[in-house]
Image 1 (tube, one colour):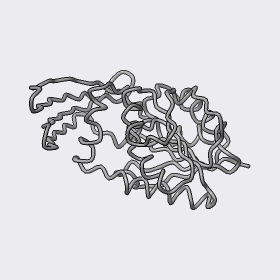
Image 2 (cartoon, helix red, strand yellow):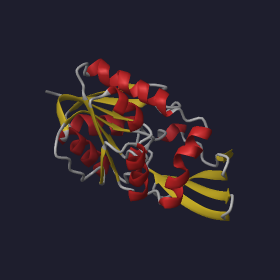
Image 3 (cartoon, rainbow, N blue to C red):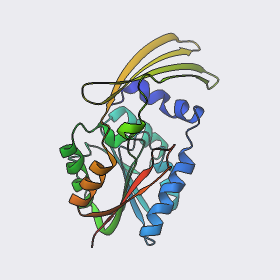
Length: 238
């Protein structure tokens, strides 16, 4: 779960590193519209700061967001003051309506530790979709594509702050680990450092497809989307 330090620099860091939230949102919206041309409502699960919802909000009449991190939701509420955001776990959240589409992007689904949890989350998505609704899920790297030992480094600036980020990927007992360290130099405030450790479960393509099918979805996998990780598109059977 992201804390307040990470939430503060989340958008700056990822956009400066080349993550194109608008393009990714367009890809997802086209998939939604291809399967549900009359879609008018979208729920983004693990919505973070609302970086994708900012664009969904332009194209759909009603959007909402759910996330387990209150600091990330605080940022989202500032960005999209007219949108409803609620704290929640993707396995147990409860909204007071159903949606034509549900999205879960940026590999957030891989924070779930087991196949049972994956199935529970997709069943929760299904309960919150209208008949024929669409679920678009971005997976973490499949096991055969993960690169242990990968190191990344970035330095970004916004005129007030300079943020340095380094990361190291590894295999762990539970799955794939990502250790990330940040140094932030801010005018008038000095220098601070914090670190995060993330664990992702490397579900296989077959495990995703089985979980979708068990939750009542007809599923397809779109190769190459979202920086090469691809996208699962599930259509809830009517």
